[in-house]
Length: 167
Image 1 (tube, rainbow, N blue to C red):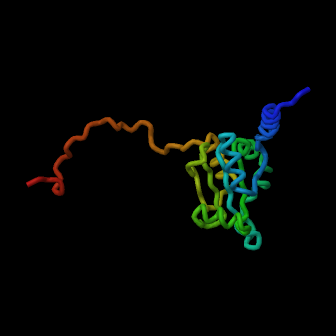
Image 2 (image 1 turned 90 degrees about the horizontal axis):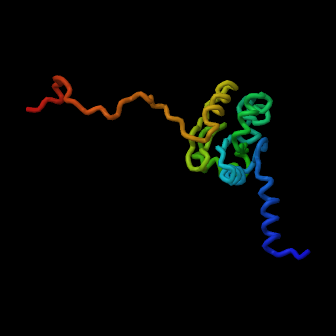
Image 3 (image 1 turned 90 degrees about the vertical axis):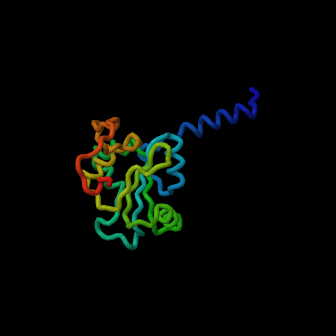
């Protein structure tokens, strides 16, 4: 059988493309996680942890510990996850990229990898973390505005107002 270079490229692309599912994988490289999330069009969960020597009890967010909760494990399947140690050279650059905010830092980036749709340096209890994962699992911004606001109502002159009164 004669194998053409084009066939080799197509088969190679299929084999490489077959391993694009990052479910359950936690990336230590923001760059790899970013590209994986862009490829599969899923939101990116970025956890920036303090350097290992500065980690106090409960000061870091452990994705492995979070995965022990079955509900969180299931929700994490909707994300590409990056857990970054800011003590490494790569981690320092990523921390700087995210504005050198207090650690640990949790950020959710949308499906298009363009917007941070959630970010906090606050301690997240398990229930709060679950709520965050559930709220942003579609990778879309969440509107906090009430849908029953009437933006089409015409402006009317207010009643008597001494500051608005014209002379």
